[in-house]
Length: 445
Image (cartoon, rainbow, N blue to C red; front, side, top):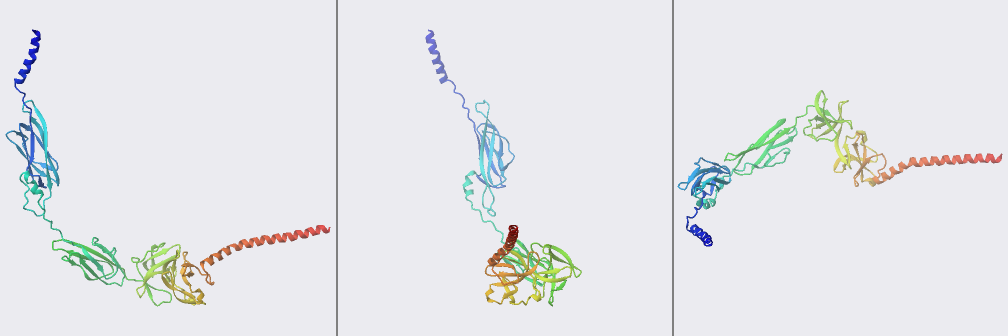
């Protein structure tokens, strides 16, 4: 009996389970949708949130602001939230919160998101509809933006001046230039052409100049309101107020400022008094030379050596580099111009033409003599050999090549040695003779 009871009980329990009340399904959901797939930056779109039971939710968004909303929805009603993009790019809106379980057992936390693309509004496209349902996304993406109204190019195509050189050279993006002019320049003509032929250019033509700085502005103007200004600063040197003669020359040399003078290595700028007026000068203490930057009646400019003790100009000073030596062309004394065996004329030292001498003897046609200041400030004659481009001090002897000169220098260096050896040998011979006589005297005794 017990065995039968034990077998019947499981069967009865299985039958009652099969025909009993089924368990309640635990299904719940949260849905979120956007009114459009694409929107302009700064314009709003709507996000709708719905559920099949009941939910308390919160809404957050990236790259956008979230408008006010009621954080509750159920199966009979949905809730809408206004979203406004801040920048170009994707806008992701997320709804999250506890959703009630259908079996009344509690809540389940759910989260859902939707993404909308934010773009810039075209400059002119009033017919585009950014609202509506997400079904319009394809049409919005295919909308062709109208081209933007571009500003006219107001740069210059060219800019030039009739006097001097603009520094730096013309570049449409550079708007300021400097032109240095000598004191004899009293006017200048400015020419310019706009890149866009419809743009007007003002400030061109002839302009009067005065000493010092003169600013001339060239301006471009477009009918859309755009403009650009280019300024040229003309720096006109002051006319000399102090003049000095050079030797017996009747020409007068005026002292200029150093504004347009070339800088010389080894010289420093100083101020000295000439004829009781303060002027600019440069000085080299190693050479013991003071230079003034001057101009003559032909408007030729350059440096001249000034003797501060005598208050006189003594020579022209033109720097020249020859065969690696830093020398200077100086004024040749009158009593040196006529030398026996030479012809005083214009000669070339490398690419520089200077006053000098050629040899009358045709055997020395490759040689010339020039009068220069050396690196120690001493003025002397130099012998220049054209074919080998060599230069050396002239010793008033017939010209020789550099190789011959080096051989001679070596032989001169041996002379003291040979003289010393000769002296030693002479003493030895004399000593031998004295010793020989002494031996003879001893033998006679």
